[in-house]
Image 1 (cartoon, rainbow, N blue to C red):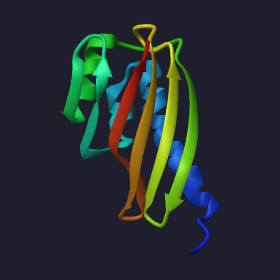
Image 2: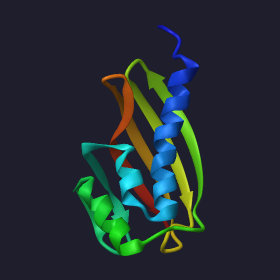
Image 3: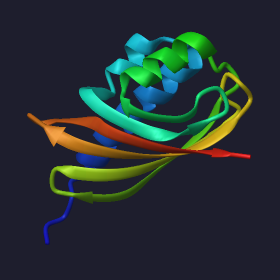
Image 4: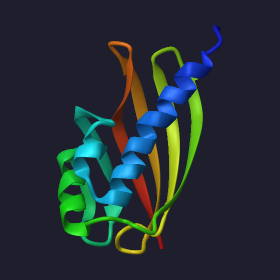
Length: 124
């Protein structure tokens, strides 16, 4: 078992923060920098019910919701093993005033960390 370099942790946080910063500003072009073009997402929300499949669903959601100017977040790296990582993102007060927990799976692809999947839970 080898030690994960601190730089990898920093890069993972930077990628996840692009997601959060884009949600706050409502700028999906910023969020797109965090996700692989073929990323997937699955979960439930109040506007669509079950939402699953392509990450394009996130872009549609952002178009409807707009900026989440009062969003609060916490990022916890759960594990990093070589070229894979799991991250929990706790979000409070999104654009609809709702709170979520996301689990993001990241892959180090061609030397760069990128989110390849997102699972999310809406808190009631």
